[in-house]
Image (cartoon, rainbow, N blue to C red; front, side, top):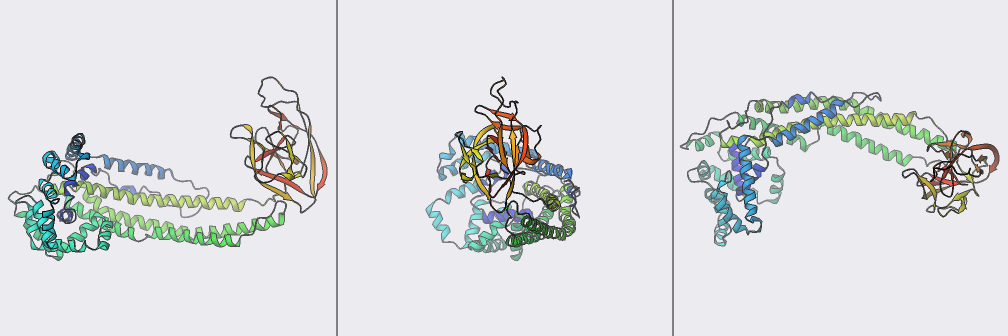
Length: 564
């Protein structure tokens, strides 16, 4: 009965579009594949029931994701022999129509073309084309406008139906006419139209069937009308039963899509609580402590650890609920899909299906199989999201376990000479954010200008300094293969913890620098490798300065140093 009601539904709602329905159907031609999709539910790995940083994302997730994609491609590319023939015929007709310039024709010319040339098109409805032509006649339009909804619907249906056909007998039935009139009246309401367009095919079928039953057009009546035909229809296969199972599955799935599942509800609840907690913590967050303020940094560190614990507690609260809801959802989805899969497995999708009402169901049955794949996909994605949550939990744990280390002031005295792009030098205390200094761009492996993002100035204490004497005969990165003269020794005064950039791009604190470490010194035509020769205490300074640059480094006294 679903097939008949679907045909009625289309006639009621898409009278004038019926000329083009077959073209759309052929374009979407597909058929189910002989795969028991319900077995895929058991291939979805269950989400972890407890957080563990030793957990790894199961390889089955990616493998199943790939398999689902392959099945979808197989369904959309599969064809019955009849579908293949119809598709080829439609493609040939489309190519010929394009060659004949159909795109440049008026609507009237297009309809005339379809009337004359469309006979070879699969499922061509000459009556529908003729009706569409008549609809453009103002006199015919006026005649229709004078009719009631019921009269208009009956007239249009009779005009489209072939003489003596089941369709013509159906349109003459008073119950059908009453149901059709009520539907057309409802379609005058924009709210109803909008709601109708949002309904799935199964929901539209169910509504149409209910409306027909309301006016006495039930299963028995349909059989009576169809049975009056002189030609007995081919014996049905099991497509009707499969369509009933598909409709039931589709309606349940559509209903579930309108309200959050237990998994969606839990996910939403967790991330809502996480967002509330994040906003609350942001409002309570202590201001960042300055470099060298160890006690202030310690307070910020401890607060961050408390914030981490609260976030982890929230995650642990929800994880067991995720596991149980996932198991319940899996059972529910399998139960929804099983009846359809059972009926689907009994059908042989070949040209053995002779009844036209069964042939047109092959495509929606394939859509039902894709819907089952979507159910598996949803379950798979949730498992994957829980593994993502486990990874986030472990990242928080790593941050929590990181020991406290005071960030000391790493700076230079006010007169430290910073190299500018033009080769000149300026005292570090005179540099301002937005200025451009000379740095080293590791992405291109060259000395390059770099913008100053921030100037750090510390004046809270007497800062200890060291003096490094740097100079060695080794040469690095010359433009010539010939050795160059040794760079001149320089004296660099800075705080003991300030980093210097090594030739291998690592950094080393001034007080940890060894004579074997290779430093980089700026020369007129190249960077030269140099090394520490001496280190001595240099007293203290009441104010020290540091630059933060885009490249993360800059030159002081010609030596490449880190921004921090």
